[in-house]
Every structure is written in structure tokens, then in C-alpha cells.
Length: 119
Picture (tube, rainbow, N blue to C red):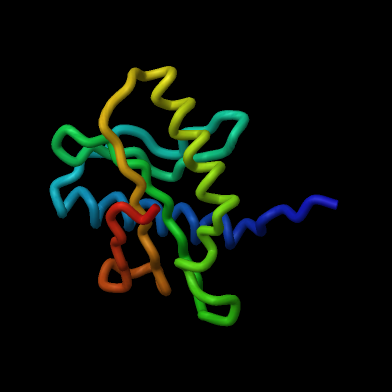
């Protein structure tokens, strides 16, 4: 049985991704692509920080009951993100890159934690 996210969960995720993109643009990054998908997985945001391509995982957690947003980026999730990023680079060309995480406890700009080089 596959667990499908609720409509409210999807809307919260979209709001979180939009807030993350806005936050990072204010910090000087340029949006390249949203929700890049391939058979390996999905990358929420792809942005450029000067000459570096940044693959960004956005995590929203309403509470710390299951360890908070950071703990949810498991080694398995990191592997999926890495494979997805490799596929992106195969399609669009190699570039220096890094993986960042945006962690949120609420859908507010002042509730954002930005972790550069998250893994």
C-alpha cells in the first residue's frame, strides 16, 4: 500500500518551497529550476550561487516529534538526491555543485534555517 500525501501536505510543501526560493534569492542566489524529477527522485530547488550550482532540499516539519526537519534527510534520501543531481548534470552539463538544505518549522520567512553543504 502506497501512502499518498494529503492535499494540505502538498500545499504546505509548495508554500515552503516558495518561501525557500524567496529567502535564497534575497541572499543572492538565482533560481534555475523547481521540482526537477527523474526516475531516481526529485530535487526541490536548483539555484545558482555565483558559479556554483546548488541542489536544495526543502524540509518543513511542524513539530520535533519525529526528530525535526534535519533528521528527515536520511542517508537514503541523500543518496536519492545525489543520483538525481548526477542525472541533472548529465542532461544539462557538468558544473561545480553543492547540496544545501532549507529547514523550516513553520511557513514563515523568519523560521528558515539554511545549511550550506548539508552533505
